[in-house]
Amino acid sequence: MDISTEKKNAANVDISAKIGKEEVEKRVDKIAAETGRKIKVDGFRKGKVPPAIVKKLYGEQLEQDAETEVIREMMEKAYEEAGIDASAIIGDPIFKKYDKTEEFIEVEMTVCLRPDVDVEGYGECVPSYEVPEVSEEELNERLQKLAKQSAKTVEVEDDRGLEEGDIALFDFTGYIDDEAFEGGKAENYELEIGSGQFIPGFEEQMKGMKKGESKSIEVTFPEDYQAENLKGKKARFDIVLHAIKEKKIPEIDDELAKSVTHKEDATLETLKKQVKEQIATEKLSKLYNEELKQKLLENLIEKFDFDLPENIVEQEIDNLANQKASSMSKEEIEEIRNSSEKLDELRDSVREDAQSSVKATFIVDAVAKAEDVKVDDQEVTQALYYEAIMTGQDPEAVIKYYQQNNLLPAIKMGMIEDRLFAKVLDLDNAVGK
Image (cartoon, rainbow, N blue to C red; front, side):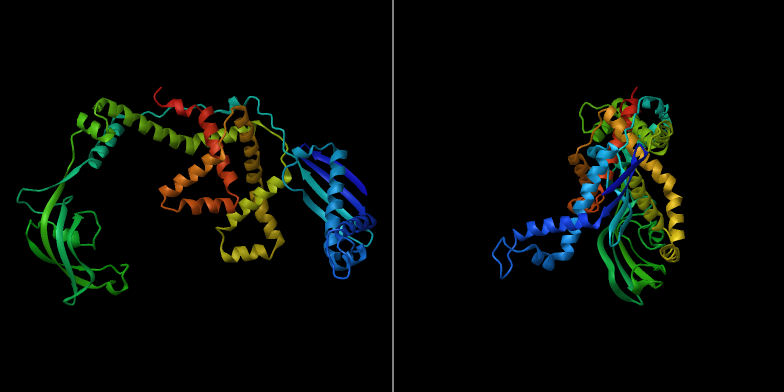
């Protein structure tokens, strides 16, 4: 067995080997003898099956197992020769050649190592920023929104007509060619006038109606209406208005503060402080997601340089290339499938981004260790569970999907990254200073 190793860089080692077929045959004989002592074959006592019979029965599988063992032994010797610690190996080797002839098996591969990332001085990469200020106009606008959300609906006692913004309580029956149609009838229906919930022209024609009044209105269903049998049809609706309601928006005062916060000792001033901090936090979150996060990553990538394991980079190239291909036309995808040159072009177009992504992952991991920032598996599951509930999905199904598609590590890394960046940027303490 001839083995040679060459260290390309700190993260990648090339291994070449020439393995004689006799070494494989010796291993086949050994495995056949071991197998013969374990199996039962008709005509032979258990444990006494001759190797020749085992080879006849399982020849192809024995050869595959023998080759696997020889390759494993070859790799162990190569690691020793190159001074590689097995615990430093990351991912599977990249096989660049595996040729079998009558006399030899020739192997060429690259073994990849986890880079030793020195992130001393990472604090210099943290961008400076100003905590967003909240104007009085923004504060008042949010308070008014809270007041509107706390509005109560009350029936109008005055003898007046229905106006924009009012809520009508009414019965209606719809007719096409003087025949009532399915789904065109309701009783005690509530509709906010001006909300645009009904067919164009319906709400407009209701304006001015008074409590107890009946009216017939005519409208035309839109051409893109969801019900096929009603598209573009002219219809008449007979309406009886039972009541007019309006929203009473409360004053922006201590009582509103108590209602919104559910605290009896709340005041308008404490509500203002709380709302102001909430707006500032929202602004800071927007600043982080749109500017600070990317800037910090760019600074880290630019500051630290180290060799990247080729197999991890290739995996990320696969990932990014697939993402890019997902937005291509069928014709473009077919062209790539039929042309190795086009496939290489696609992969090369994302190579730089893939290298940056892999580099960032190792840097973030190293800085997270330095800052003692961790996220356990239960937190990842809880985050997915909560997100599923908030989006109306089945939490168990969502978690199972992420597990089956091996997406949990990426989610975990994203959570670590956000927690780490929040810490080094001091986001948690920025608001309220």
